[in-house]
Length: 267
Image (cartoon, rainbow, N blue to C red; front, side, top):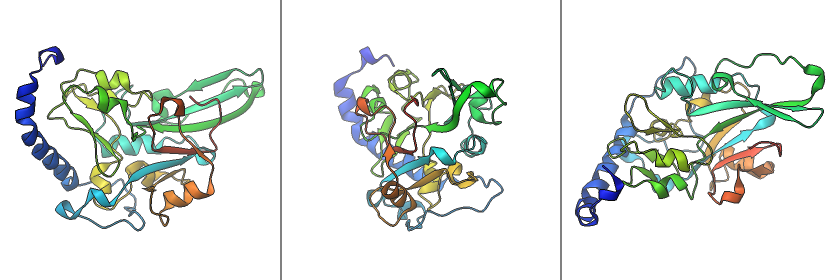
């Protein structure tokens, strides 16, 4: 559908049906069977163990914390995410990826992310010229004020009550407006479905009381997931004991990916 051909009267008459379908979409997410990645399934601490219709999104508000000093660039999070969410095994399609920052002695900054960091990183060829190096995991920031939602002409991208930004495949027309609007480069167009795709915080897992796959497999605990407004969660403790920052705060998107020990060179 061409956005310029939209009929406001028709959209108004179909809105109740869309809302019902959206609830069905979220229900379907909660019923998806998660793929076991060969490790113990980790529950969300103090989260309501919920299944299907028992899950109440109004009782939760999720976000993710990332400790840059703990990330070793192993890429296990990228692999786990791809497996759990059926991300195409092709270059440039990632719900989450890891970037390596090399800060040289002359002040120049080099950033690389070969295959999203999925297979780790090759050794550098100029060790003597490098003052510092570190790894930065990236993903959809699940903004509280998401520009992708604002530009979607059909309401396919939407924000849930529990703080997650999702895409309804049934409504997405593949216009790419949301991909262009995302300041974090976190969206891509599915080559088979021809709809926008992105990190969902593994929504089908969190409604069952499980952490996202990337958090589950991280060997160093660099990723922390939980509820922002409950002081007993790992994320709440992480934010309380660290000076956290967000990416591109000047854009006022109110991102909910909180970084600790973030270097000023990260963009």
